[in-house]
Length: 321
Image 1 (cartoon, helix red, strand yellow):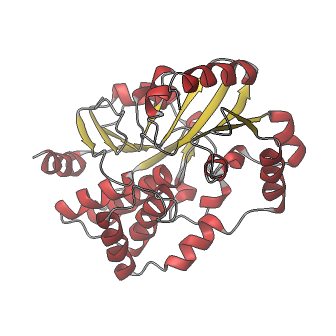
Image 2 (cartoon, helix red, strand yellow; image 1 turned 90 degrees about the horizontal axis):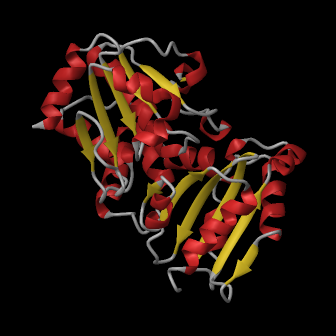
Protein backbone atom coordinates (compact mmCIF):
# COMPACT_ATOMS: atom_id res chain seq x y z
CA UNK A 1 0.00 0.00 0.00
CA UNK A 2 1.24 3.49 -0.87
CA UNK A 3 0.88 4.86 2.66
CA UNK A 4 3.18 2.13 3.99
CA UNK A 5 5.69 3.07 1.31
CA UNK A 6 5.40 6.74 2.32
CA UNK A 7 6.08 5.88 5.95
CA UNK A 8 9.17 3.85 4.96
CA UNK A 9 10.52 6.59 2.67
CA UNK A 10 10.20 9.22 5.40
CA UNK A 11 11.95 6.86 7.83
CA UNK A 12 14.84 6.34 5.39
CA UNK A 13 15.21 9.97 4.20
CA UNK A 14 17.94 12.11 5.71
CA UNK A 15 16.75 15.39 4.22
CA UNK A 16 13.10 16.22 3.54
CA UNK A 17 11.55 19.27 1.88
CA UNK A 18 7.86 20.24 2.08
CA UNK A 19 6.60 22.62 -0.62
CA UNK A 20 3.47 24.81 -0.44
CA UNK A 21 1.87 26.43 -3.47
CA UNK A 22 2.28 29.99 -4.74
CA UNK A 23 0.01 32.61 -3.10
CA UNK A 24 -0.42 30.32 -0.07
CA UNK A 25 -3.75 29.88 1.71
CA UNK A 26 -4.73 28.24 4.98
CA UNK A 27 -4.89 24.74 3.50
CA UNK A 28 -1.42 24.62 1.97
CA UNK A 29 0.17 26.39 4.97
CA UNK A 30 -1.73 24.37 7.58
CA UNK A 31 -0.89 21.13 5.77
CA UNK A 32 2.77 22.10 5.40
CA UNK A 33 3.20 23.03 9.06
CA UNK A 34 1.09 20.08 10.21
CA UNK A 35 3.27 17.64 8.25
CA UNK A 36 6.46 19.31 9.47
CA UNK A 37 5.25 18.98 13.05
CA UNK A 38 4.22 15.34 12.58
CA UNK A 39 7.56 14.33 11.04
CA UNK A 40 9.34 16.06 13.92
CA UNK A 41 7.20 14.28 16.52
CA UNK A 42 7.14 10.81 14.97
CA UNK A 43 10.57 10.49 13.38
CA UNK A 44 12.69 12.95 15.37
CA UNK A 45 13.56 14.59 12.06
CA UNK A 46 13.55 18.24 11.09
CA UNK A 47 12.18 18.75 7.59
CA UNK A 48 12.43 22.02 5.67
CA UNK A 49 9.45 24.10 4.53
CA UNK A 50 9.44 26.12 1.33
CA UNK A 51 7.25 29.13 0.54
CA UNK A 52 6.77 30.27 -3.06
CA UNK A 53 5.25 33.58 -1.93
CA UNK A 54 5.23 35.62 1.25
CA UNK A 55 3.14 34.06 4.01
CA UNK A 56 -0.01 36.13 4.71
CA UNK A 57 0.17 37.70 8.19
CA UNK A 58 -3.16 36.04 9.00
CA UNK A 59 -1.35 32.72 9.40
CA UNK A 60 1.53 33.91 11.58
CA UNK A 61 -0.10 32.01 14.46
CA UNK A 62 0.55 28.59 12.88
CA UNK A 63 3.02 26.44 14.84
CA UNK A 64 6.47 26.34 13.18
CA UNK A 65 5.52 28.77 10.39
CA UNK A 66 8.57 30.86 11.33
CA UNK A 67 10.73 27.92 10.17
CA UNK A 68 9.48 28.24 6.59
CA UNK A 69 11.81 29.89 4.07
CA UNK A 70 11.16 31.65 0.78
CA UNK A 71 12.31 30.03 -2.48
CA UNK A 72 14.88 32.82 -2.89
CA UNK A 73 16.76 31.45 0.15
CA UNK A 74 17.21 27.98 -1.35
CA UNK A 75 20.20 26.49 -3.13
CA UNK A 76 18.61 25.22 -6.37
CA UNK A 77 21.47 22.76 -6.92
CA UNK A 78 20.69 20.81 -3.75
CA UNK A 79 19.29 17.30 -4.02
CA UNK A 80 16.79 16.08 -1.40
CA UNK A 81 16.02 12.50 -0.48
CA UNK A 82 12.33 13.37 -0.35
CA UNK A 83 10.24 16.31 -1.54
CA UNK A 84 6.56 16.46 -0.56
CA UNK A 85 4.11 18.85 -2.20
CA UNK A 86 1.02 19.77 -0.18
CA UNK A 87 -2.08 21.23 -1.85
CA UNK A 88 -0.14 21.85 -5.08
CA UNK A 89 -2.73 21.07 -7.78
CA UNK A 90 -0.30 20.88 -10.70
CA UNK A 91 3.43 20.79 -11.31
CA UNK A 92 3.10 24.22 -12.95
CA UNK A 93 2.13 25.61 -9.52
CA UNK A 94 5.65 24.83 -8.26
CA UNK A 95 7.29 27.46 -10.46
CA UNK A 96 10.94 27.93 -9.34
CA UNK A 97 10.77 25.08 -6.85
CA UNK A 98 10.17 22.54 -9.64
CA UNK A 99 13.92 22.03 -10.03
CA UNK A 100 14.16 20.85 -6.41
CA UNK A 101 11.18 18.54 -6.92
CA UNK A 102 12.57 17.02 -10.11
CA UNK A 103 16.01 16.37 -8.59
CA UNK A 104 14.67 14.60 -5.49
CA UNK A 105 15.26 10.89 -4.97
CA UNK A 106 11.59 10.46 -3.99
CA UNK A 107 8.58 12.73 -4.63
CA UNK A 108 5.16 12.81 -2.99
CA UNK A 109 2.01 14.70 -3.99
CA UNK A 110 -0.68 15.19 -1.30
CA UNK A 111 -3.75 17.05 -2.57
CA UNK A 112 -7.52 17.15 -3.06
CA UNK A 113 -7.97 19.06 -6.34
CA UNK A 114 -9.90 17.23 -9.03
CA UNK A 115 -7.57 18.70 -11.68
CA UNK A 116 -4.45 17.17 -10.10
CA UNK A 117 -2.59 15.00 -12.64
CA UNK A 118 -0.78 12.70 -10.17
CA UNK A 119 2.62 14.03 -11.18
CA UNK A 120 4.73 12.51 -8.37
CA UNK A 121 6.19 9.10 -7.55
CA UNK A 122 3.60 8.66 -4.80
CA UNK A 123 0.26 10.43 -5.17
CA UNK A 124 -2.33 10.83 -2.44
CA UNK A 125 -5.00 12.81 -4.26
CA UNK A 126 -8.57 12.61 -2.93
CA UNK A 127 -10.93 14.94 -4.87
CA UNK A 128 -13.81 14.10 -2.53
CA UNK A 129 -11.89 15.44 0.48
CA UNK A 130 -12.69 18.91 1.80
CA UNK A 131 -9.04 19.89 1.93
CA UNK A 132 -5.48 18.67 1.79
CA UNK A 133 -5.56 18.90 5.58
CA UNK A 134 -8.26 16.21 5.58
CA UNK A 135 -6.21 13.97 3.25
CA UNK A 136 -3.17 14.43 5.48
CA UNK A 137 -5.09 13.58 8.66
CA UNK A 138 -6.35 10.36 7.05
CA UNK A 139 -2.80 9.43 6.03
CA UNK A 140 -1.46 10.12 9.53
CA UNK A 141 -4.22 7.97 11.01
CA UNK A 142 -3.45 5.06 8.66
CA UNK A 143 0.23 5.27 9.52
CA UNK A 144 -0.70 5.45 13.22
CA UNK A 145 1.28 8.64 13.75
CA UNK A 146 0.94 10.55 16.97
CA UNK A 147 -0.88 13.84 16.28
CA UNK A 148 0.31 16.49 18.72
CA UNK A 149 -1.58 19.65 19.62
CA UNK A 150 0.73 21.61 17.29
CA UNK A 151 -0.10 19.32 14.37
CA UNK A 152 -3.80 19.40 15.27
CA UNK A 153 -3.91 23.22 15.18
CA UNK A 154 -2.37 23.19 11.71
CA UNK A 155 -4.68 20.52 10.30
CA UNK A 156 -7.75 22.18 11.82
CA UNK A 157 -6.72 25.47 10.17
CA UNK A 158 -6.38 23.70 6.81
CA UNK A 159 -9.85 22.16 7.03
CA UNK A 160 -11.49 25.28 8.51
CA UNK A 161 -10.24 27.64 5.80
CA UNK A 162 -10.89 25.38 2.80
CA UNK A 163 -14.47 24.76 3.92
CA UNK A 164 -15.02 28.48 4.50
CA UNK A 165 -15.46 27.90 8.24
CA UNK A 166 -17.62 24.85 7.46
CA UNK A 167 -19.99 26.84 5.20
CA UNK A 168 -19.08 25.52 1.74
CA UNK A 169 -20.56 22.54 -0.07
CA UNK A 170 -17.37 20.52 0.55
CA UNK A 171 -18.17 20.39 4.28
CA UNK A 172 -18.75 16.65 4.62
CA UNK A 173 -19.49 14.53 7.65
CA UNK A 174 -15.91 13.24 7.37
CA UNK A 175 -14.51 16.77 7.57
CA UNK A 176 -16.63 17.50 10.64
CA UNK A 177 -15.65 14.24 12.33
CA UNK A 178 -11.96 14.97 11.77
CA UNK A 179 -12.44 18.51 13.10
CA UNK A 180 -14.07 16.97 16.16
CA UNK A 181 -11.10 14.63 16.64
CA UNK A 182 -8.70 17.58 16.43
CA UNK A 183 -10.78 19.45 19.03
CA UNK A 184 -10.51 16.37 21.27
CA UNK A 185 -6.73 16.68 20.99
CA UNK A 186 -6.96 20.22 22.34
CA UNK A 187 -7.70 22.62 19.49
CA UNK A 188 -9.83 25.57 20.61
CA UNK A 189 -12.16 26.36 17.65
CA UNK A 190 -12.80 29.97 18.64
CA UNK A 191 -9.06 30.72 18.77
CA UNK A 192 -8.43 29.37 15.26
CA UNK A 193 -11.54 31.06 13.86
CA UNK A 194 -10.58 34.45 15.30
CA UNK A 195 -7.03 34.14 14.00
CA UNK A 196 -8.24 33.27 10.49
CA UNK A 197 -11.30 35.51 10.14
CA UNK A 198 -11.29 38.23 12.77
CA UNK A 199 -7.83 39.79 12.58
CA UNK A 200 -8.21 42.07 9.54
CA UNK A 201 -6.44 45.41 9.59
CA UNK A 202 -8.25 48.70 9.03
CA UNK A 203 -6.36 49.07 5.73
CA UNK A 204 -7.54 45.69 4.47
CA UNK A 205 -11.19 46.32 5.37
CA UNK A 206 -11.16 49.70 3.61
CA UNK A 207 -9.37 48.23 0.57
CA UNK A 208 -11.90 45.43 0.16
CA UNK A 209 -14.77 47.90 0.57
CA UNK A 210 -13.20 49.96 -2.23
CA UNK A 211 -12.91 46.86 -4.43
CA UNK A 212 -16.52 45.82 -3.92
CA UNK A 213 -17.70 49.35 -4.65
CA UNK A 214 -15.92 49.11 -8.00
CA UNK A 215 -17.21 45.65 -8.92
CA UNK A 216 -18.56 45.18 -12.45
CA UNK A 217 -21.71 43.19 -13.19
CA UNK A 218 -22.77 41.64 -16.49
CA UNK A 219 -25.11 39.00 -17.96
CA UNK A 220 -28.12 40.37 -16.05
CA UNK A 221 -26.06 40.45 -12.84
CA UNK A 222 -25.23 36.74 -13.14
CA UNK A 223 -21.52 37.52 -13.52
CA UNK A 224 -19.52 39.84 -11.27
CA UNK A 225 -15.83 40.67 -11.25
CA UNK A 226 -13.27 42.99 -9.70
CA UNK A 227 -10.04 44.24 -11.26
CA UNK A 228 -7.28 44.78 -8.69
CA UNK A 229 -4.25 46.90 -9.53
CA UNK A 230 -0.91 47.22 -7.74
CA UNK A 231 -1.29 51.01 -7.50
CA UNK A 232 -4.44 50.57 -5.40
CA UNK A 233 -2.81 47.94 -3.21
CA UNK A 234 0.06 50.34 -2.59
CA UNK A 235 -2.32 53.24 -1.92
CA UNK A 236 -4.16 51.27 0.76
CA UNK A 237 -0.92 49.67 2.03
CA UNK A 238 -2.17 46.09 1.85
CA UNK A 239 -0.29 42.84 1.18
CA UNK A 240 -0.56 40.20 -1.54
CA UNK A 241 -3.32 38.39 0.37
CA UNK A 242 -5.59 41.44 0.10
CA UNK A 243 -8.06 39.75 -2.26
CA UNK A 244 -8.67 36.75 0.01
CA UNK A 245 -12.43 36.23 0.36
CA UNK A 246 -13.40 38.89 -2.18
CA UNK A 247 -14.73 36.45 -4.77
CA UNK A 248 -16.85 34.79 -2.09
CA UNK A 249 -18.34 38.16 -1.13
CA UNK A 250 -19.40 38.77 -4.75
CA UNK A 251 -20.75 35.23 -5.08
CA UNK A 252 -22.90 35.82 -2.00
CA UNK A 253 -24.98 38.31 -3.99
CA UNK A 254 -28.29 36.59 -4.78
CA UNK A 255 -28.22 37.04 -8.57
CA UNK A 256 -24.52 36.21 -9.07
CA UNK A 257 -23.70 32.76 -10.47
CA UNK A 258 -20.03 33.33 -11.27
CA UNK A 259 -17.67 35.76 -9.55
CA UNK A 260 -13.99 36.31 -10.22
CA UNK A 261 -11.11 38.53 -9.17
CA UNK A 262 -8.30 39.56 -11.51
CA UNK A 263 -5.27 40.79 -9.59
CA UNK A 264 -2.31 42.43 -11.30
CA UNK A 265 0.96 40.57 -10.71
CA UNK A 266 2.93 42.62 -13.24
CA UNK A 267 2.22 44.58 -16.41
CA UNK A 268 2.13 41.28 -18.31
CA UNK A 269 0.63 38.77 -15.86
CA UNK A 270 -2.53 38.53 -13.75
CA UNK A 271 -3.86 36.13 -11.11
CA UNK A 272 -7.46 34.95 -11.44
CA UNK A 273 -9.60 33.61 -8.58
CA UNK A 274 -13.05 32.27 -9.52
CA UNK A 275 -16.10 31.14 -7.56
CA UNK A 276 -19.32 29.67 -8.92
CA UNK A 277 -22.81 28.70 -7.81
CA UNK A 278 -23.07 25.60 -10.03
CA UNK A 279 -21.03 26.01 -13.25
CA UNK A 280 -17.77 24.03 -13.50
CA UNK A 281 -15.22 26.85 -13.51
CA UNK A 282 -12.27 24.46 -13.02
CA UNK A 283 -12.56 23.78 -16.78
CA UNK A 284 -12.20 27.49 -17.52
CA UNK A 285 -9.10 27.81 -15.34
CA UNK A 286 -7.64 24.61 -16.78
CA UNK A 287 -7.69 26.23 -20.23
CA UNK A 288 -5.26 28.81 -18.87
CA UNK A 289 -3.00 26.29 -17.14
CA UNK A 290 -4.70 26.51 -13.75
CA UNK A 291 -7.34 24.41 -12.05
CA UNK A 292 -8.93 23.67 -8.71
CA UNK A 293 -12.43 22.56 -7.85
CA UNK A 294 -15.70 22.68 -9.77
CA UNK A 295 -16.98 25.70 -7.82
CA UNK A 296 -13.67 27.27 -6.75
CA UNK A 297 -10.67 27.55 -9.07
CA UNK A 298 -7.87 29.83 -10.17
CA UNK A 299 -5.11 30.42 -12.70
CA UNK A 300 -2.30 32.72 -13.74
CA UNK A 301 -2.66 34.37 -17.14
CA UNK A 302 0.22 36.05 -18.96
CA UNK A 303 -1.63 39.23 -19.89
CA UNK A 304 -2.47 42.62 -18.43
CA UNK A 305 -5.54 42.93 -16.20
CA UNK A 306 -7.80 44.31 -18.94
CA UNK A 307 -6.89 41.57 -21.42
CA UNK A 308 -7.21 38.89 -18.72
CA UNK A 309 -10.73 40.09 -17.89
CA UNK A 310 -11.63 39.94 -21.59
CA UNK A 311 -10.34 36.35 -21.93
CA UNK A 312 -12.07 35.11 -18.79
CA UNK A 313 -15.37 36.78 -19.73
CA UNK A 314 -15.17 35.17 -23.16
CA UNK A 315 -14.92 31.72 -21.55
CA UNK A 316 -17.64 32.52 -19.01
CA UNK A 317 -19.99 33.65 -21.77
CA UNK A 318 -19.45 30.32 -23.54
CA UNK A 319 -21.08 28.61 -20.56
CA UNK A 320 -24.41 30.23 -21.50
CA UNK A 321 -25.66 30.89 -17.98
